[in-house]
Image (tube, helix red, strand yellow):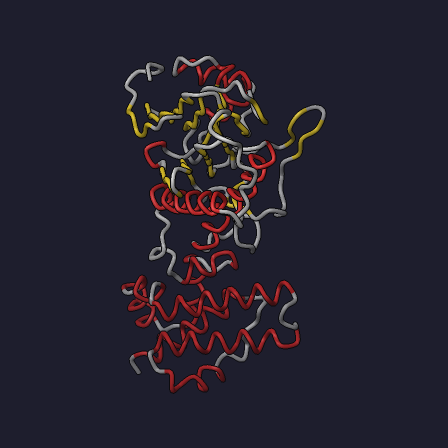
Length: 379
């Protein structure tokens, strides 16, 4: 692939070649493909695109200069400029931009006989995770965008299928791919940064999907009910999980924490410790601070924290009646205290001490349960 200097070849197949150079991942399509993408230039469905490009366009946080450069020049002009950095004709490129590092890209392949699916994902959610329908501060008008703010999280997905697809199947692949991405976020219990909901993606997610134009009779379905849809789902989900592990340090063990479980309900280290300082003696607080991680990552404590988050969700959605909400939370909080203290026989005592547990003040309820359990642990 003589298209960029210092190119590191990552993967070669009969229909595409994947390489990386600096801030760019470049997929050269070796045969004519039908491409569906979110690219500003050459976006939508095309048959003339020869290169799929993913690149780091800015740093993940506070990169105002880069944001001003991209928006000031205009996104189409930026497309041309970025293509110029890697010596590609901008008319032949579908491009995605992100703050994620290209060295953290995850490449996953899944096969069924001769049928093969490749997912190439970069992902970051710490700055921009959202649930569809969350409140937003973005609006597009005839005059342009109003109140555009830089963001630091994006999931970019490149999906390549080695068989021809009908136009309908190509479009349906977007649904399957998106559901797979969301399944990965749910598995990691990633919370939205804009609401109390679990995230379904980020506000700046992009994709490129490509299938050869002349690679056998076009397949007609990419639904999860058929093998191709299953391969897409597994490849995209696994690649998203791997990319988030590298970019954000998110994996099963690191998400087993009281704060990860309940962060979307305001339970973070600052608010949590502030309330605990009021509830514990000076010596108890000192001991807790020196053993903090062993408390918030304790499996039975984290288990109840996820249960409390689920209960709060069900209260909010109306599954559980408001008339029972206080007592349901109180029961869960008592279990947290019993688990932390390692004294389940004192559950009734903890339940009695949590009469003030309030679903409208989950941070205080969780802190109170923690204080009761910690104080009882060694008494």
